[in-house]
Length: 316
Image (cartoon, rainbow, N blue to C red; front, side):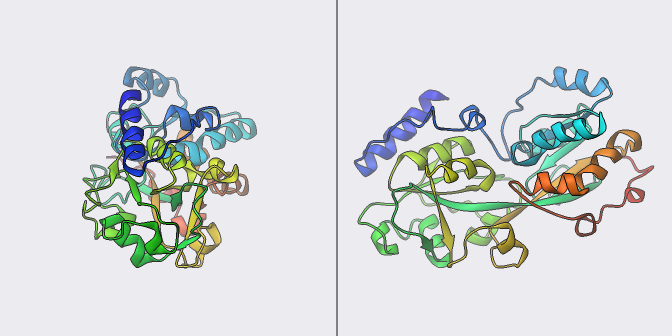
């Protein structure tokens, strides 16, 4: 993995004629360990998950967006406030579905719509929106990009920042083909859900690689979840561009003015009332919603349609 990352960085540097300084010590600890979105290997041995699930603790496996965006701090506060344990593992959408189907986890997390996945037909709830942001090197003078221009960049039709009002520098698109076998809302908005990325773009395997690469090279641009860039952005180590003059924010999402968003869904097999219900009740409580708001756009109990009576006595 490190060799691949080095080669990606070397290729971009050669293309743009620049060098990048190492950010290793400045990256958040979880970023340096890798944060993936949808399709990636499980970070835990399934045998460990089986033993954890059998312990009587509520367990989650699935998208890292929920893992790092809300569920790890939520689990800590849930235990502090209720005395109950909520064990959270990362991975990807397929990891979450597999873990629930194989009963190695109670809840699976998806960052794509449930329809059309292997979870289709399973009980599920959407609990939040994930904000996707357009990122560039912090030295980039451009502050805003139009939707048509973004599509042209992603497709490889615009190749120089000067054409966007920036400096005379070649654009280096860095992309991750997120959930390629499923419907992906942001890809659908920009590319009609087709894998029509610029042939000149740099494809990476993880969100960590994408963020790290864009952080290092002045000509780079990418699309990624806000969860994975918020700390770097606040530290001034990466720039987030407005889209058609609208800065990405929870308020803009709620007002319908910023639509580069994806659903965050939870799926399960059995509604184990005594185990699952307390966590969902906590998630939709004021304390839970405050935790979810730190990096995501949470849905309220009413917006999510959360009613435990819908799921009791229902099993897959």
